[in-house]
Image (cartoon, rainbow over all chains, first blue to last red; front, side):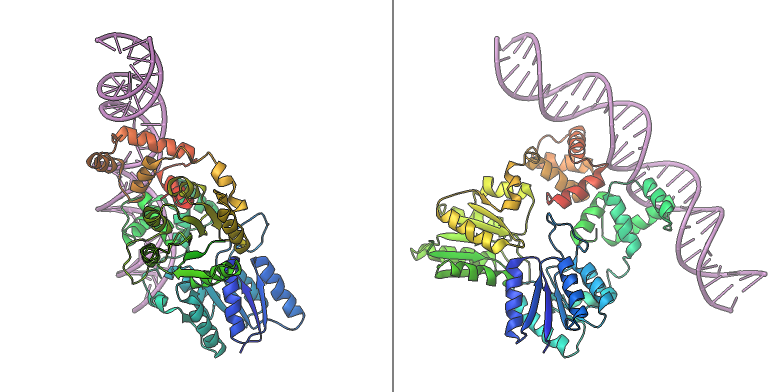
Length: 222
Length: 222
DNA sequence: TCTCGTTTTACGGTTTTCCGTAAAAAACAT
DNA sequence: ATGTTTTTTACGGAAAACCGTAAAACGAGA
């Protein structure tokens, strides 16, 4: 089994159970960080000491508080950690259930497993850790197994997200066009932007821009 | 200390720590439900057996899954329980941090304490339970103590929420007017609706309707 | 009942969205 | 190079949002 494990999780109510579960797996060296920044520091130190972590278990969203932080999400933490230690195994443990998000974790960040926090998630987490140790990859909670197969969101790209974000900031189409032009983003013609928004409205079955943003917010796209 | 306590919490990773914490308080009779419906059943049975619960600790949001449920949130659960047993003490333990929401829990549902899930929430939960036992009320996590004082959201009423919800469903102002007329909600004239929306836009510093709904979504108003 | 003040509604003009069609530009294959 | 397809942009008209002003309806107090 893994020797040295790091848990990044802000909620104490959750980290207690996670750490306990890992202990029950017979892992003795377990460290825990409540902030992404602290987690990264621990990873750095472990590498420096020539005793790197075998496994990182991370949440995705972290509460913001008084403290100034560099890294603000599990995504950023994992990206930063993998830069320092590309071979580390990673398991994400989060409440997030949007296939769009989960897919990008596997494809863009190359995580090894995704376990959704739920009514029976601790046993699932255990199984996922064991599976990752046996060199399996792309482990995912049973109730979300559809997420990786789900084709429906694959055509929503960064450009669309940026467009939705601009709309949600209250910009008009004209203003977005200018903004994109200044940032060198294409297409940026008013008509193209309208067309793209129109496509999104059809895709999400939205009646108008207001409806579209409401849906995008619900899906966690923006 | 309380004799008999019920915990309503869907996430196993959290309920483990909560139950442990309550055990450490010396409470021996602790029950736990993963669904609101189950929690209500337990309350009913306890009343029938003439051994009602002294305290209910509940989460607010519960995941939906395959199971059909009557009650879908902690709000609904607490309302239903208080109907059967008005004197029961209630503590809400949730990630929610919108002052609008928390205020309504105290004012409309009459909860005794609100503890925000966070980096140090288990000790806070313990303190809150002890405080409620000593007949204190309106206990709230330190980082949210501003929420009850916060005047800013007090003038946003049910009517405004309904209006924002209608907008977020993609209805036009005309359609909302008709809808309100059919439901006997006043005012329902197009001009009045526009004026009200305009007020909301000023209040929330929104550029247009799209922006307004984006903000409302962020605040958890709709 | 009358008056004053507030709320609700009506109306008109401007801007923006919304939704077609079509031209221009770019990407691609042969 | 040349023709074809796809993408991007331009344009125009109808609908809705946007925003100010003014009339009508309502409610409380004298």
